[in-house]
Amino acid sequence: MTSTVVRAAAVGRLLPDDPLLRRLVLMSLVNTVGNGLFVTVSVLFFTRSIGLTPGRVALGLTVAGVCGVLAGVPMGRLADRVGSKRLLLVVGPLEAAAVLGYAFVHSFAAFVALACAATVLERGAVAVRSALIARVLPAEGQVRARALLRSVMNAGLVVGAGGAALALQSDSYAGYVTVLALDAASFLGAAALLAGLPVPEGKAGAADAAGGRGERRTALRDGRYLLVTGLHAVLELQLAVLTVGLPLWIVLATDAPAALVAAVDVVNCLLVVLFQVRASRGVTGPASAARACARGGLLLALACAAYAAAPFGPAVVAAGVVLAGALVHSLGELLTSAGGWTLSLDLADPRAHGEYQGVFMSGQAAAHVIGPLVITVTAVDHGGAGWVVLAGLFALAGAALPAAVRGAVRAG
Image 1 (cartoon, rainbow, N blue to C red):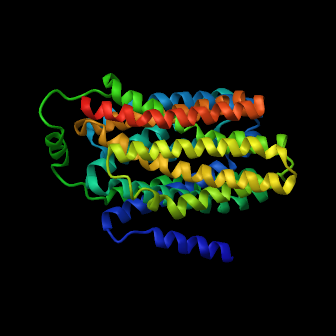
Image 2 (cartoon, rainbow, N blue to C red):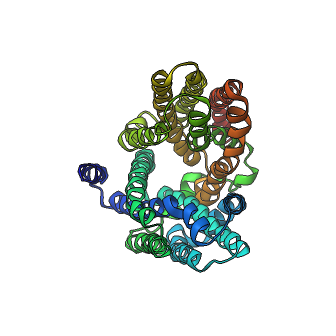
């Protein structure tokens, strides 16, 4: 009861006074509570109610992830043509229908087809929402707004995951389908909030003016932007470290208790909710964003070094080392996230925000798809040596970003 009150109070503090940003925050909160519900129960639903094997679930979700990587650019281009708000008003109900569709799936082929459709819509919507923020909010407030939205997103996921406990406890088809219905309702609720979002007339024209004269750039031919996207995608491998590598490392290689996995998740979520806005305050342009990513990459490397050292102590020491590493890891994540938002926006052609956001978000999605494999063949399979390799990747990618950003700014 107390934890629920604390979470509600924390969410209340995250709601801003600005009515436009407040509506965006409420949209994010509604949507991510639904996502938290679904993600928490989805694998068990697929295996216990649909009857798929864990291997087939993993294969289907991998195929869907690849489809999601390919969705960002075409969805972004479509948003540039028809408008981000108009496109999201269509995508939201389609996402609701896709989630409800899982209740009627009874074969592997149908599962893969629906998972691909749902992931394409979900990943495309991420890029389109990013373009919408670029259109409706002033440039000087976008980094803080994105930081606030990310804090709210994590709070919503925690609330949704807590609510899913009832369905997990019942472990019944009816309970799981109720979660699907609530997730679908969250998409419709977010769409209803979006319908009332004022999108200033002439915003696209202002963006055209901001873009200056000359030929409109194309994201897929903007080599500097692609380089920055690729380097930041390497930093995004940190998510797989937290969700795949570290849990397996704790259980298989250290004497720390398995419950430490949940403690790491709590530490990470709380730090993002409480400090993401603060971490974004020093990020005011491409140069400061690149420096933030460089510092974040170094922190991620230090976290990997801590994880590598955890097996060399007894349970209490191992737990302390892992928690210290998770704290440093989370700080690195805060910095690389704040830097990434600024780079994705400030280095883009403002006349094609949808396409550019589609490219950047596709880079992140690709990292999330291949991340489990990368982490497995390094840290999980090769132990300390693998953690050293990951540390080097994070440090080098972060260190390379300032030079890549300087080149992109000159080219732009």
